[in-house]
Length: 312
Image 1 (cartoon, rainbow, N blue to C red):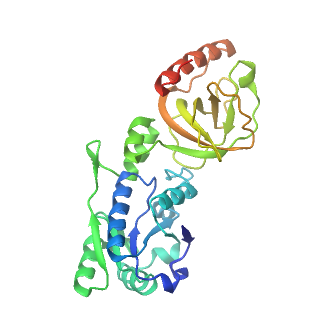
Image 2 (spheres, helix red, strand yellow):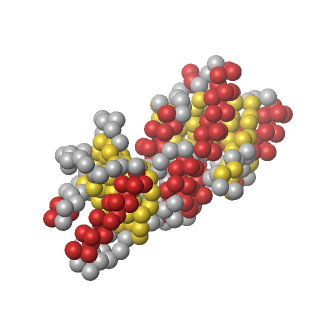
Image 3 (cartoon, rainbow, N blue to C red):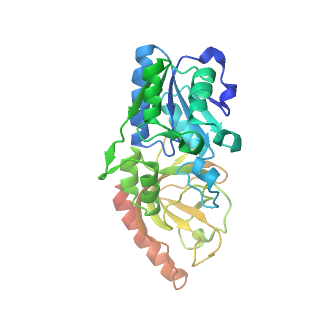
């Protein structure tokens, strides 16, 4: 999949394709339905599917916050879109100049003149342009009246009695309902990181860990999770238990994901791992010393093994 950062960089020879527009944070089942619709249109037209998203998220641009709104890092979103057979991703820089593009200019200058869209697919609640001046009805009207391009607005898919959205996904992640998160994503929630050095205290109590620094995204509640771990360039999903948080009994300062693999002794230092969160076990807790911590971890491991279907 090719990635560009400005619509002005779009190669003229690639005009005439099906475009999907949205933020695609999480690439959840609702997003996947929109992309599936685009693939059908592209197959009928014998052309490619392309995606236009925005970096940073417009909400982050208009209301900057140290707390990230992202459900997944950009590189993971790009990889997931590539799996959805997207041939080009326009990760449009959302800056002051782009925020002032009117809805009419977006249609005439961006979609038609620069991108040469043959067909556009969005969600039915899509809004765009200066002060959100355009919406799906406006796009449909322009497509019908001018014939410059085709347009499909897809209704949201209902899930858990609510329309699927990135907002719902963020709420479920924050509440650590990993089973519901997986149901909305169509896959387990997770992220990747490179193993960093730690104090190696886990080894002293019989639970050696690999430590990851969490990416700047929406994180689940601090606590203990049953997880699976995949090492880069390996297809094995290793069952494990992980603690996400600041380790109040031992450290209390630095946020880490500490992962203890079951029944495996691998040299993971410096390697990139992908961690998939399967089930929440308990909140992060302060213990009265190392012995109490060891006893609780032993109990946590038993629960994690049961939820992962791993025998001793």
